[in-house]
Image (cartoon, rainbow, N blue to C red; front, side, top):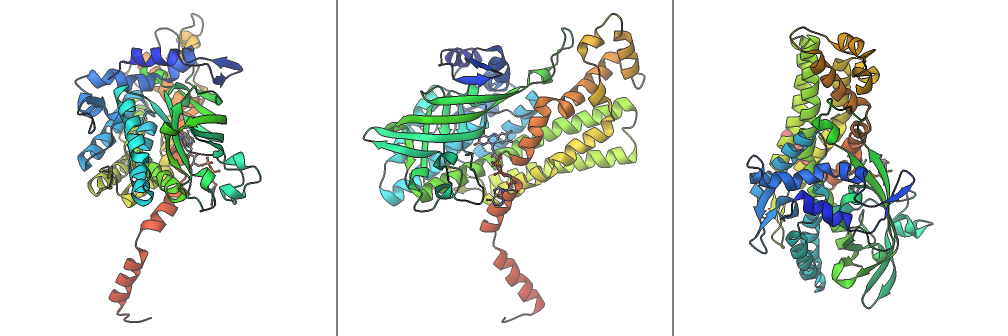
Length: 477
Ligand SMILES: Cc1cc2nc3c(=O)[nH]c(=O)nc-3n(C[C@H](O)[C@H](O)[C@H](O)COP(=O)(O)OP(=O)(O)OC[C@H]3O[C@@H](n4cnc5c(N)ncnc54)[C@H](O)[C@@H]3O)c2cc1C
């Protein structure tokens, strides 16, 4: 298992291929190091007695201790531990823990590679197992590159006027393939060791070139990581806070004729399994959302409760009702994730798969409510989050006293604590990180319509219609 220092050192040695704010930068750039702080914690806390039971587990292939973020779930208990771990880590950083992408895609590949081999006699699972061994041994961080640019949403991949709208194979060689296209919205790709690339959607039989899944180092020749950063406003010395550490760099990940060697290819042309791995990643990721969204909900609810307390309105009826609403959202999503863990099933590969309906209704409920949760925080906070002077003015010898005096609400709470609480709310409601999390809350892991599709294609509606017929006394239509 690696330390965060070892993680950062490996990143620092990678080729510079991050395009951010007008520069080409390496992974030792202060912005990348800052954005990777959430990932660093997943290494640091693995040895912390308060967190080790979640972060450390045993590899089912080597029997060695590994970080749970590199683990393939073998039981319901594993799924529960991952879900719980995700919630506690999101609480700790105040937002997205970011490392789950790689975990979820590796779990998806564990299932689809085996299923493809069973049907076609291919050896994808063996290849992938070798890769898993390397992944676990080196305690790697993987970014999941799934979402294609997609062009015209009404057209299939093979119908797009520009075939690059979906990542596809442009050349087949004896030793591998060459791919082209772009995967958008890649969380933490600029500070991942590896890019794990899978298709976005179900594919038609004539779309073999789009049925490609593989893993490559994130600095491979031909890969461009075009970044978009999100950080909270800078804080003056003395006003630091853990929430400030939370940052993020998303990327448009471009594959400009990138060579992928055979040993790193896990699906290649088997269209139904290209589609299957797309759905499986989404399923594992929506289950992770049943851990992270409650964690982020805890941050939003806790901040709302704190501001209500400092404002002197904590006990009013409408505040209590709003807090109850926030608690219900977080805990229902969490409960759906628990149900998905308990009602899970075993794949032929041995991987434990979360229940499709419960994981999807949980993620759907989270997506439908994220703006509602932000709305309640905004309501209780009043207008201050949008107008609060920043810490330079707070520390100013001329106007600092005014900032402190007029931010204060009730007695018994210091001026500094009032200011800190409102700064936190301001970061969440008006900062780049809070805004990115809001959009992620709707679309990350699939827009709500994608959960509707997953639910309606799995749920046995006919059984419920038959029930209604039975109760109504209808024998024949
Ligand atoms: C902060 C953030 C982080 C993310 N991280 C990752 C990541 O690490 N890796 C990754 O692969 N992806 C990631 N995603 C991508 C995420 O999964 C997608 O945003 C999501 O699947 C929606 O795709 P889209 O953004 O292309 O939206 P669109 O496809 O443009 O969808 C927008 C809306 O259009 C409508 N629509 C689109 N297509 C159809 C259709 N066929 N039929 C009917 N209606 C349709 C729906 O109403 C949908 O809500 C991330 C997204 C965000 C916001």
